[in-house]
Length: 341
Image (cartoon, rainbow, N blue to C red; front, side):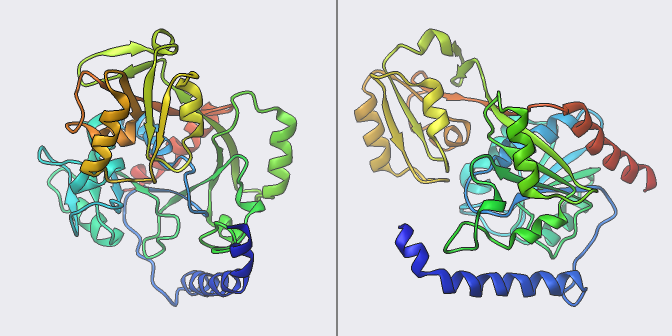
């Protein structure tokens, strides 16, 4: 794989040139970006692969939905529906995609919408009788036809964009210079005890502008696993034999948090749609053991496996330090925008 990526280096140069031209055309106004009269926060990354967008969106929902009518807008990756869909009682992971459906189930107080055409999606949300006061744009950093008022750029610890290269040689969707559009950069998935000296080294590598703020976050795992109608303490089931399964980009920390030497671990591709053969494989390997999966996979597996056997482990994004400053920056942006309307 490494050799193949090196062979494809000329294509990475070409891809980088194309994305740079596209960004230049948007920067100069030759390609049109659309703005809207309400606060919009775009969360995204420069690279392919998991950087923790879903827990970051959920962090913002928790922060803002106490005071504002919040809506999330995603493209609904791998959903079976088309066009604009606003989640309602008939919604499921097939219609919305797994991550938007997760938002819908966890946060009934917000609106959850999907549309690959973000401009149309925003217009549809604003045409609702109950209009949102804040829109969170999920995975929209490269979607430049819509201009958000605030950009949060995520980059994963151990795989920061400053050390990466363009696709297909590296994992970057666009040049690292695209980081200049960010208001805030968050280095995600850090060790909870990341030394300050290492944080300073990463900050030096990223070389942010003076107007940009840098934060470090980790994934905080819940102390309980949950089924449809019960919860169990992780400490109580840690030594039990169980089946762990994950269809996410980087499942190793999930497995490490839960597993013991007797456990069976099953890995599937990110956003995997579980077939009947997959379900039979899971049943066969689990036998009577409990099955623990990620929250994202749970919304796709629920109903296909026994409710009393299937559990999920929730996660949250947790800032290592300066959480009050991060919250203030977000609240100040949203408050200023809504105050001016």
